[in-house]
Amino acid sequence: MSDTTTGTLTSSIPGLVAGTYAIDAAHSEIGFTVRHLMTKVRGTFQEFSGEIVVKDTIEDSATNVSVELASVHTRSEQRDGHLRSGDFFDAENSPKMTFVSTAIKPEGDDYVLAGELTIKNVTKPIELAVEFLGVDQNAYGQTIIGFEASASISRKEWGIDFNVPLEGGKLLIGDKVDIHLDVQAALQA
Image 1 (cartoon, rainbow, N blue to C red):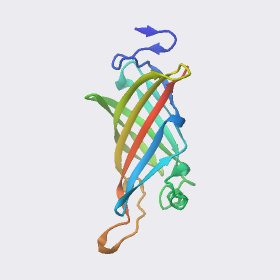
Image 2: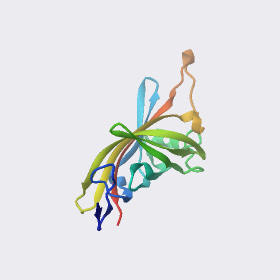
Image 3: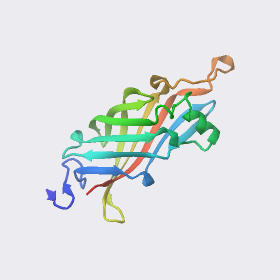
Image 4: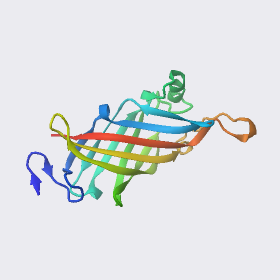
């Protein structure tokens, strides 16, 4: 089945049209959570871009995302400045974090998106659990898709190992970082 104005429908998700979808940063969020003492600090990145290339089958599809690390926002300018520094992201010397997919596979009603995450010039494989939220039309008549994705990583694996030792052998900041994405993307003409 084909639609000449928007492309070919994929066989695996009803209504999903093959083509290139640009991530809509105004309607998307890329964030993280990390343990700080007994609570969690939550942060987002304000500047990012990316695309999702949907093929005739989901397994042949791909995505890439680029995040400006200097755009980190945790509701504390002092903490944001420290995160931009060489202790953490080193945004001056390594300004971008990137993700490039290598595979996508169905897992029940959801998906697993494998890819390579690069932070501070260190590239490591990760897998994101993805929930596809659907296909719709926006107010401008564009086909849009939405999904949520999440993963947990060890920040030390990317050379982000700053910490402060506390009494009793504890550390100020946790190593585990939970990454979450809430993404809307629009089909490009």
